[in-house]
Image (cartoon, rainbow, N blue to C red; front, top):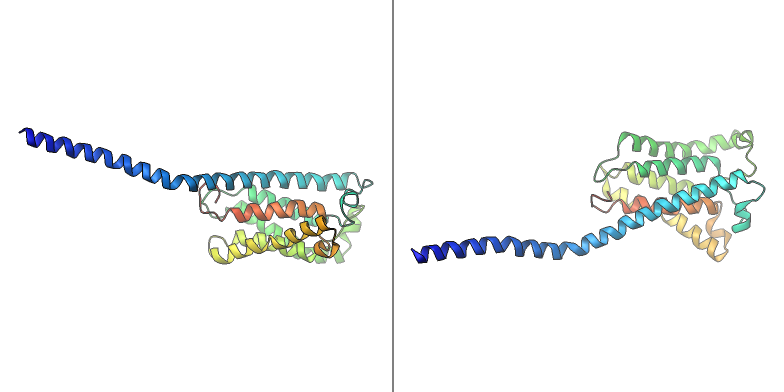
Length: 221
């Protein structure tokens, strides 16, 4: 009788201790992953703040046309109004993203709006829309800006069906704004071309925020 009780007691001790040890082991293994995840979440929030600052800089550049913000800081390139609309739509689409969910209808429409701005811009430019708007320094949407915007949008639109191609698009979208940043830092205009400094300040964190979304975790994706 005593031996049977001892066996039951030992069995209960082993059964109760194994989940605890397993839980501890699992916790030790996953803690670095969660720590890395928190850093990515922080990076994404920083990108949101940087995008907001860049959009305010674009607005200030339009509001105080006489100050000529870009000329004071770096060069003569300015954010085109159509580019500004595309950047705002991209920011709203990024804010509407849901964890581990495919793109919602709202997000999809916003990204399609970004694509429409890029594709319709040449026609609007040739029709003289910028002069009709009366913008003091309308600037131009450079080919590097247009490609980056299209790649960001395609990366998110294709994420659910063609994740590999979508990731490549999101990764490639970083190239143009990254080169533009280096051009402004080094003072080489051939690096940034027609991409304004204010456009770069929005486009780089926007690309990075959407690239970070490919991390397969609930807090990011």
